[in-house]
Each structure stands twice: as structure tokens, then as C-alpha cells.
Image (cartoon, rainbow, N blue to C red):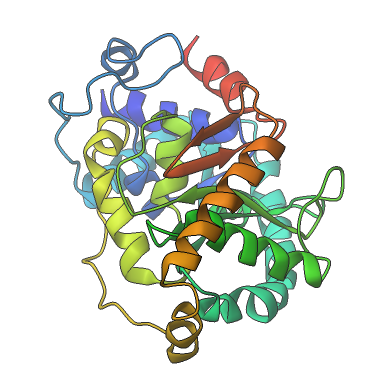
Length: 304
């Protein structure tokens, strides 16, 4: 059973061309696939996040099983990474992709860290390829953004203007090394859409840039359904909240009736401009954009 779960885990990440360390195999050990499929709807989303969860497996137990599978030739191990047999090239690819990620750290420090001063932005985390370590030369930099619940549209306008001003916002086909502001939440709550294996992985792997307490609250709010996919996942305790004095001063300008009116007008204007399709989720307290999403095909390839 454990051997099958480890191979299933490596196969899921193999579909993303990504080998794992022993620690990552432990963290992302997928629940029994047969039992898991019985809990999913036709979109591969979990139907009941409160269903019984498989017990966690100790790291030493997984490490022992990895050694057994390696000796049997079912998987390969090299430079601290594990992959399916015959997929050794992925290990070299991961090292090369890691170098692409290092080059982007300057962009992150230059343009993301200062966003802690932008009014009503409560937390920002790296998501997608940059957080997962899957970044390539053509990849964009996905962001999850948590805003003040009363000023999501104002925060989105100001944040978009910031990245647009410096020419580093993803726009159309211009994606490489640009920031993709593709998920907004008006508070750190449990999500209503896309509660699937891929998103469980992405939310688990979020890398906080600003507002650690808000990102931790978001992760812990979603832990129940994430555990359906990854029973071993744990999140750190919630950090102490900190606010930039400049941010607090700027927010005073909008914390009034005029600010309420501006928020309503910005919401109406932006919702008219948003092109809604199967990869866009829009509601008053959440926006989720996934242009050219391949998650569905990936999940279908794994579960079918």
C-alpha cells in the first residue's frame, strides 16, 4: 500500500516533470488513489472536505520504503532526488530550472517586497512554478493576494498599477518573468472552487512574501480538504500581524464614505472588463484567473 502511494506521488509529479526529495515525498504523499477517487466529483474536486482522512506516515517509514523501491528498480535516486525509473533526466532538469528561479529573486525583491506599503494589500505569496520550484525561462510569476475585505477592488487596482508602471505585469502573450496577479481573496478563508489535487499542492507550497499571518490563516482555513489529498501536510502556526506605517497612513485617505464609493465604482468597472470563461472565477470576495489552464488535463491524466 505505501509503495503504491509513493509511486503514485512520484507519478503525479512526473506528469509535471518534477522529481522529489525524500522530504517532499513525505510532505506530498498522496492518499490511496482508489479511495480518493471515490470522494471526487467529475471535475476531480473533493466533495466532502470533512470525510475521514488517512493517517499520517512517519518520515523514517517513507525513507525506508524509498530505499526498497530504489533497490528493486521501481524508482531511481540521484543527488538527493527520486523519480520514476527511466526518468533520470528530470533530476538534471530540476537543477537547471532552479537556476532560472534564482535569477528571478532580484525581480521579487525589487518589485514584490515594496508592495507591503500598498493600501489594503494584506498578504502576498508566490504560487505556481516559482513556489513549486518548476520555473522555466518562459514561466511567469504567479501570485496569491489577500486584501482587506472592504477594499478588494481598490487593492487590485493599486497593485495592478504598481506592476504595470514598471512593465512587469503579465499581459496577453507577454508572460516570461512577469508577475501574474491571478488569485485575489478578500479575506484568508476556505476557497469554494477548484478544491482539487493540483490546488492542494499549490496552496501547500505557497511562499510568503508579505503578510505571513494572512497566508498562514489561508492555508490553515483550507487544511481540512487539503488533508484529503495530502494527509502528511502540516502548516506553521500563525505569525504575528505587522502593518507598514506608510500603508496605514495611505489607507486613511480611503477609509471613509468616499473610499466606499470608489470601491463600488472600481468593482463595477473591473467586473465589466473581466472576460469570464471556464478558467475565471469571480465573486464579491474572490477573483481567480488561470489563463490557458492545464490543470484539468493533468488531473485527468493522473486519475484516469
